[in-house]
Image (tube, rainbow, N blue to C red; front, side):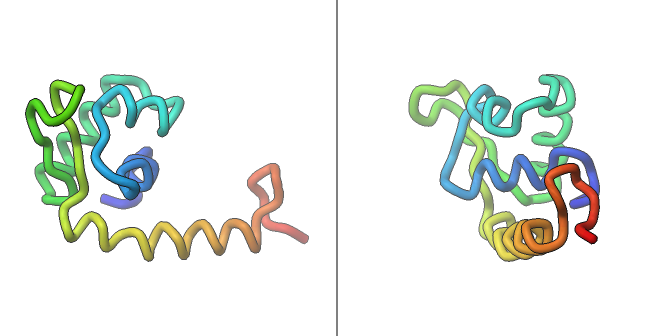
Length: 94
């Protein structure tokens, strides 16, 4: 599941709390709405996120489950590794 494009970006976007579809899309950036819908559905099916209807100002808000929130350590480790080993062009530093 984690290797699917946009999944870690979506989870990262939800680490600071629930967000609506459009807010997730803006934060993730570059993910088309169809793909975002598919990824959110898959993450919901797997129990990583929950969709709350009518919460706040959005028609549907997504939030991490306890299991989803535990992915924060994974995301932090990947970011720390990338900051250490990747140059600005995405290649390993020499």
